[in-house]
Length: 247
Image (cartoon, rainbow, N blue to C red):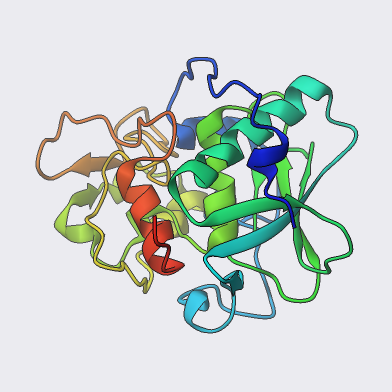
């Protein structure tokens, strides 16, 4: 299998400046979309996603690399396809994940222009799994990488088991139907520090019902959360530790 970055090395790695934080971006794109949990996660009724990476939802490793087959819907125009590819190339430059074009593999990531931004958590055995990228709302680098990190096995940062040491969740300000999205879950944090800037972290006003903050950093209540425009060093460290990358 030929790594995607060799085929498309000529592509520029620059992207447009993003506005909003990633949670606001996804929430706007997913407004009115039903059937999702945690804002942008497709539920898997066959397996509890909690700690799923210890029970088979990691992508398999072959030698030094983890090869993840992908298919990008032909309905995307060239500039859209290239934007997806540029977001994926960051994984190639800093982790042992290698995205390759799908041939006949049964398990692969399928990028398509859906009604919002969404992904499963972790590898779904025996079938292709969709990553929805709405044309207007899901095409920032960080949102594409956010959904791919879900597909590699990662939760939202503010759902980490240790989050209460770092942030306060202001439940009175959360939309009633969105409160479950702020629940802690049992996670394997892999010895990587909690990252207030992670692209997997909700912003301060995520799912606010009254314009007030829903998440506040304990170290600095004025700190803006989840403002990275691409994967942070901690996001990358989590991938490398989970998949035992040598980079």
